[in-house]
Amino acid sequence: MIAPTGKVYLIGAGPGDPGLITVKGLECVQKADVVIYDYLANERLLEHRRPDSELIYVGKQGGRHTLPQDEINRLIVGKAKEGKIVARLKGGDPFIFGRGGEEAEECVDNAIPYEVVPGVTAATAVPTYAGIPLTHRDHTASVAFVTGHEDPTKPESKLHWRELATGIGTLVFFMGMKNIRNIVGNLIANGRDPETPAAAIQWGTRTDQRVVTGTLKDIEARVREAKLGPPAIIVVGDVVKLRDRLNWFESKPLFGKRIIVTRSRDQASVFAEMLINAGATPVEFPSIDVVPPSSWAELDAAIDALESYQWVIFTSANAVRFFFSRLRELGKDIRSLSANKLCVVGPKTAEALETYSLKADLVPADFKAEGVLEALGGLSVKGLRFLIPRAKQAREIIPEKLRERGALVTVATAYENVRPATDVERVKKLFQERRIASVTFTSSSTVNNFVEMMGKSEYKSLMNGVAVACIGPVTAKTAEEYGMKIDVMPKEYTIPALVEALVGYFNNKS
Image 1 (cartoon, rainbow, N blue to C red):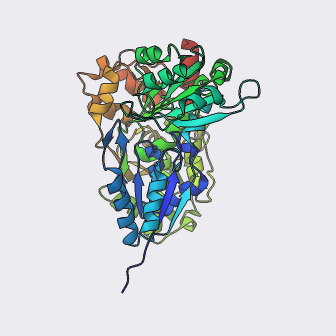
Image 2 (cartoon, rainbow, N blue to C red):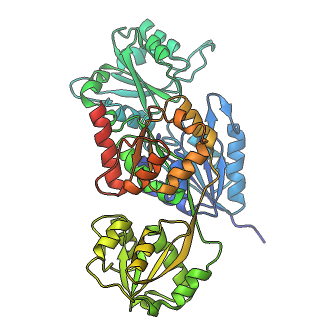
Image 3 (cartoon, rainbow, N blue to C red):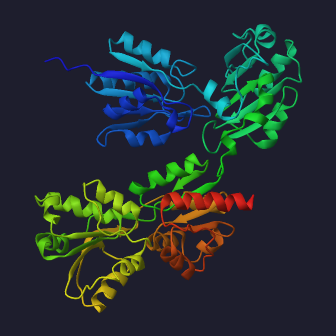
């Protein structure tokens, strides 16, 4: 029996901002059996792959190759011959200095079906994010994309320097940082005015983008002084002068700020996306992980007796998620809650409940435990039965106060917060190098575990000069118990409000 042949998708992932991948490119990643990705493809895109897909890194960085191109070609073909759908994820556009043509030829030579999914090329996106339009009716009507990777020791260049220097308005050089002296020298020697504006853009379209501007005569010295390195794009032409007016990306309120996100990994992505949209560089450092409980006994018993409870109180979106997952596993559905009134803490918990087509009967105005008690203050709870599915370790204020008022309260463990395995040394190094602007805490558990992970003898010195942002007063109180000064706390205890408060804090500091 002949094994089925798979298919290869050569996908342009864009230059860095994960939002620049095309819809088709993302669809190909989502259905692939194997994802083969480059150094310049943003790793956040890998979050969209199938959980069971194979992931292979073949990046090339500063001349160091994980795999030579010939071996990459063989890898792509080999996986396709196994009958697999292969997503070859490449930075920028596969056919613009991406060696996609070579990989496509390899597919043709081996009779492998393939498609090329164009990507947003760094040649256009990177200058755009630096506020430099490549064409402009008042400055130029022509643009050329040029490799900057030629070996300067070669006896002859494949580039027509005279034509490039004098015949093209805007020049965009790829991979030219190591050869910037050679590029500048050839342009000036072949007739380009030494006063021509020039820019070098490192990590373009990312929130750690860095830009150095000057002229042909001094751009090399400025780049060296700024210690700019690859990956970078070099732009030469009068359009560079427009950067001062059109620098939209770096004008974002949190641009360049590295902000630690301590939320659990499965909850961090939305928060991180909001920070990115504000221009920040989120550093995901989950200090908690949300996992199923070691035993379902408490929750199972509560679910079996649901009809005996008058109220069910959900204190977090995680509580909602784990409760309904277990409800389904026990062969039940939302009809089991027909006799219960539902209370939630905070709008996000209410939203989580609504995904199951259930509307909360009570959403306190104050998004914490005290708010629940205040909202229930007008009700006679004596003799009423309350079920609270929650984390194994949580504040006891709601069950204690309800019991004091005569209620019968069952607390059932629906999930546990544990400390995850993570790269602590990498984050410590960022603190030591004073590259962190803020640490965000979204629960007392994130504070406790962060201190344990950083080290009780080290965390204070590491956090010197770093803004502490807490989602609400309960979290803030825990942080203060460790001697932290709270710099940021929103009036509304939600993630969007926390991001807004961070923006306000750094705006006031600037």
